[in-house]
Amino acid sequence: MFTYVFRKVAWTALVMLVVSLIVFGAVRLIPSDAVDMMFQAESGSEEQRQELRRMFGLDRAWYVQYLSWLGGILTGDFGTSMRTGISVGSEIARAFPVTLELVLLGTLVGSALGITLGVLAARYRGSFFDWLIQPLGLIGLSIPNFWLGSLFLIGVGFYLPGMRIVGYVPFGEDPLRNLAVMALPALALGLALGAAVMRMTRTSVLEVMQQDFVRTARAKGVREPTILRRHILRNGLIPVITVITIQVGVLIGGSIVLERVFALPGLGRLLVTAIGERDYTMVQGITLVISFIFVMINLFTDILYRVLDPRVKIG
Amino acid sequence: MNWLSFVRRRGMLIASVLLLLLILGCAVFAPLIAPYAPDQMFARARLAAPGGDFLLGTDHLGRDIFTRVVYGAQTSLMVAVISVGISFLFGVPIGIVAAYYKRFDNVIMRAIDVLFSFPPVLMAIFIVAILGPGMVNAMIAIGITYIPRFARVVRSQALVIVEMDYVKAALSMGIAPVRIVTRHILPNVTGVLIIQLSLNFATAIIAESSLSFLGLGVQPPWPSWGAMLDQGRVFVELAPWASIFPGLAIFLTVLSLNLIGDTLRDIADPRLRGAA
Image (cartoon, rainbow over the protein chains, first blue to last red):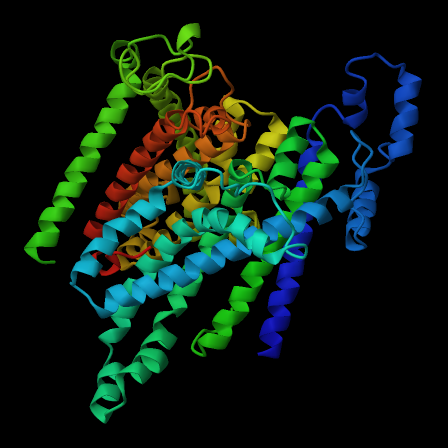
């Protein structure tokens, strides 16, 4: 177990290193650098440009720039925005909790909803509920979350006029108000995950229910709730975790878009603004941080997978 | 499968194929179907409610929403076809090379693992950030983003086939790799590829509308469902129709594609019925 975790962590660190190299390298593919862009309107002399490049360290070799950028990030310094002069790290630190909360709440809502409905559909297979839930699952998978978010806003405006649900409040300041504001975005974000999880749970639980060991347990006289908990769910939920892992990537992407619908001041909004202003230091930093969240969730589920299923081979 | 669910499945499949044909028809015959030009503004009928002269109402500039939804089908389908084409043209050869030449397999799969550590929409956004916003760059970005998916699906299927006796027999007869790939491997991965294509179309349409919604894809005044949703966002309480109908178009297109993909998968592998 220890070697497994160690190997996973080491691989994850390597992946993040390569990701940082890609993010850094890709921005350098842009033909004009930040200094050129600054001078787009007014034409500075070549000496002025060189002076600025030296100031920003853009005259150094690429690997020196990369290493100093990476070294800074490891100590929490993401550099300063070349457009606004603001520290990228502090902007990211302010937006990070919003996106993280949205992603975590969305994952939680989606997983809880999906597993519950999936188990129920499998348990009452062929019932009206089972019959109803399958097309609903496909619908849930196909609704674009930003449209769903807009529909929620329209619904609230229509049925609860005067209720303000936009305007973000940090959790630390007013937990109840924070949750009230985040509830609809989290639901809009989590529904697609819920649909995917529900479909997988249903299939997987149905398959496990037909296994010999379930029949044996039942023949031994093990009580139904125990069979469900210890035999069916323990085995049936393992492929569900895989689906959650895959879908969390989609969910993180969705949160970037959804922040715009609900005017949440998260990383997504910061990223879109930065792209509009061609603030590449900011774009690099945010891309790296969002990938980091995703990679960490993957690492966590990989280890969870291993804990839950002793049959999984190291590899 | 009992007869009831069989009838329902068949019915839903036929309905979704028809719906898709309808959307395709809108895209091809947009000038004939739409009552106005997509950028025609009616200054006196800004944010007009659905009905009367404007079937689905008008937006904040007084443009007919029905017209723009019809023309939006052109944009969405074109972007989806080209970006899925890019993923396909690069992903399939990469997957086959990985499966066929074992020495490249490890390197290719590790590279793909790294690409999978970017959440897909983030990757598309990042590529657009580098290339600059716009429709063509959005196509390229979405295309690149989903290359790893095709590569992975093709590889896992091709790995099984490479081990088959008939491929080994062909190898021992000294048949050229190109011929083995075209005669033995490609025909056997067609099934999974078709399923992957239909599901990926759905993903590409969502990705395009997401990028356009963020202002990074199709640029106004060009009609795109995602961009229309963004323009309607500000007036969501005043004129909900400006948000409802473009989103409904995205939803119905994606739903029918997913349904077709699902049904094809059930036919290909009944064991996976209902799997995510």
